[in-house]
Image 1 (cartoon, rainbow, N blue to C red):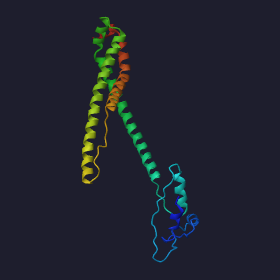
Image 2 (image 1 turned 90 degrees about the vertical axis):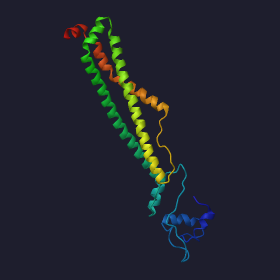
Image 3 (image 1 turned 45 degrees about the vertical axis):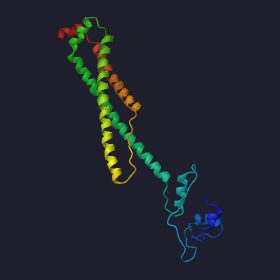
Length: 226
C-alpha cells in the first residue's frame, strides 16, 4: 500500500504511470509498471520492495507478482525453507540418536546377561543365604543404573568438550571475518541433569530383563553346576 502523495511521484521518476494514483494499479495489472513513461533522462528501478501486512498471504502475493511477469523473492518463503531444513536436520539427528540409544541399550543388556552367566554361583549362594528374588532383582538393577550413570557422565563430558572445540574454531572464523563474536552453544544445568537422568532411566529399562533373569536362577542348579 502506498499513499497518494507517493503514487504521484512515480510519473516524475520515469515509471509508466500518470498523475492519477489509480494508474498505479492499472500499470501493475497490465505489467507496464516499469514501462518508460517519462523524459529521456528519467530514472528506472531494477527492484521494488513490497511491505505486506503481517497476516497477508505471501504465497498469494508472490504468485500475483510473478503473474505480472516479474521475478519475486520472498523473505517469508526463504525463512520457511530454512525452517523446513532444520526440521529435517533435527529429524535426522533424532534418528541417529535413537540408533545410538538402541545400541547402548543392547550393550547394557548383553553385559548384564553375561554377568549373570558368570555369576550364577554368586546368585545361588545369595539365595541359599536367604536373599529373595526382589533383592536379587534390585541388586542387578542397581548395577545397571551405575553403568548408565557412568556412561551418561562420560557422554556429557565428551559432548561439552566437542562444543568447546567447535566454539573455539567458530570464534577464530568470526574474528577473521570481522563478525560479531558469540558462543553458539548453550549447556544449561537443567539440560545436564535431564541428560544424566535420561541415561540412568534408559539403563534401568535395559536392565529389567537381565535382573528378572537373575532373579529366576535356581540356587540348587547354580551351586550344582559349579
